[in-house]
Amino acid sequence: MAPIRVLMAKPGLDGHDRGAKVVSRALRDAGMEVIYTGLRQSPDQIVQAAIQEDVDFVGLSCLSGAHNSLFPKVVELLKERGAGEIAVFGGGVIPEADIPGLRAAGIEAVFTPGTSLEEIVSFIRERVKKDHA
Amino acid sequence: MPSSWQRQLAKAISKIENMDPQALSEAASLPLDNSSVQIIGVTGPPGGGKSTLCSQLIQALAAEHKVAALLVDPSSPFSGGAILGDRIRMQALVSNPNVYIRSLSNRGNAGGVGSSVVSILREVMSYSFDYILIETVGAGQSEVKIASIADTTLVVSVPNLGDDIQAVKSGILEIADIFVINKADLPGVDSLYTALRESAQKQVDGWTAPLCQTVALEGLGIDALLVEIDKHWQWLQQSGRLLEKRKFAAKFEIMELSRVLLQKHLDKVPAEVLARNLNRKDINLLQRLDEVYAEILNLFGEV
Figure (cartoon, rainbow over the protein chains, first blue to last red):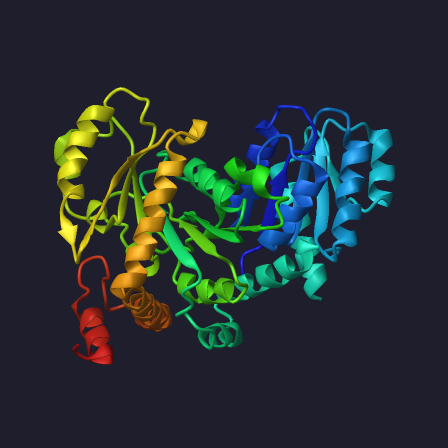
């Protein structure tokens, strides 16, 4: 079976990539191929990388507070460039109150501090199953 | 918009990588003798600065040319997953419409690249690039497969990885078309230079591998390296070696793909024999495997 490919990216200007790296490692340990792109990525760079890498998922991590503008922008650009089937999820310090808005903008899951790694892995696996069903 | 052809290429690469039989046979129908594209292999130890060096080379080449980069990182021996992180040093190039970058897992293969890499190359070549860079996994001493694939192989060394006997051992140093001493601003560069010079001065088939020094992080020595890469390219074409190299790559492709298919069969047979015997009460696998071994030998026959 083909491994699931996930692009992990940090949009925006904060320099805290611990969380993104821990999640990347957990996804690797779950047998996925994780393309790690590092800090300070613009939505344009993230989307172009996701297309070049032919990923199934884009995982966004943001701790700067700019998630409300950056996350939806990624979804929008993916759609614009004909890659709307790539699922986007996000995480970071995100207030509960922002989550419904992000979900409505097409971010399929939002993981806040305290989320277990299993939860993220199983979100991805379930989503893939749904896709193949 | 570069997105649409990049997307098409990306999807094709995935299918080949996943050994989709139809994609493999479609790729096999694409030519490998295109002499308007130079395939540059970059290998060397982990942390030697391969990605940073590739990033500099791509940036310089992409000013006037169309460049593709295939970046190989190792897969986990436990989960089969991978963290592919070579892109980190290249994100500045991602929006350049002349550049296509793709990260690949070696999918458990020894030797520095995956089994389907030549088939992937055929596919990438059909998109009229001028240069294709392949960065191998961090290589030790025997990851030499890249030399069977690339037209021009760069072996990257860095100072202070060992004494000078490391430089006369066999293996990776023998495959260099061009030696690159990266991080050449570090102490120890002189003794590495002296040690490598002897390997470098040896002429093979009329080509003497030059020895370049770079500080990739600061972009130093890149122009001189590009001159050597071009010289090697001219030599390959004038000497007729280019097509020989490509034939080598095609042979490598057939051997690798056959090996993968055979391996799948091989994995199956002993596993089945073992499973069958594990259920027998009269055999102690921890002490006596002769019957199992004989059965496997019997099934495979002698080679």
